[in-house]
Length: 150
Image (cartoon, rainbow, N blue to C red):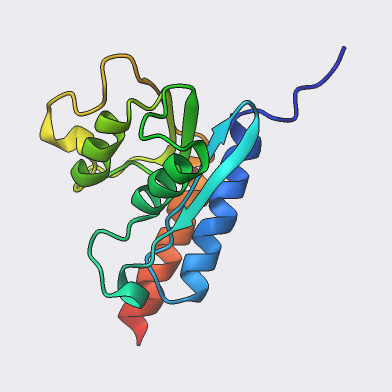
């Protein structure tokens, strides 16, 4: 029996690597990767502080990179792996990209798109939550704890 190493957990670990890169830069540690045919076509991590741009969320940067890679704006056959539930802005961009699947780690009850109680993803978009949620949550908690202690 062949083991599928290219599963949701594998790609979420790579998104967590992106989140760690954001952490090292003093950014809120959220990371994302976009996968097509079991290959990463785009990566991103929060750069809002570095770029002085409130829209420079991990998902937004990854969406743009994936669209550039594919040469088109629609990502129907792609999967986004992101360490935290997308915010409404990112969910809106994911809607317009027609992304095929969204997999996220930790839920964001205060600022996540589901807190708005409306369907913000495209009707054809599949969603999976909770993949490596504890690791994502711990990294975020450590980041904000360190910020409060400064």
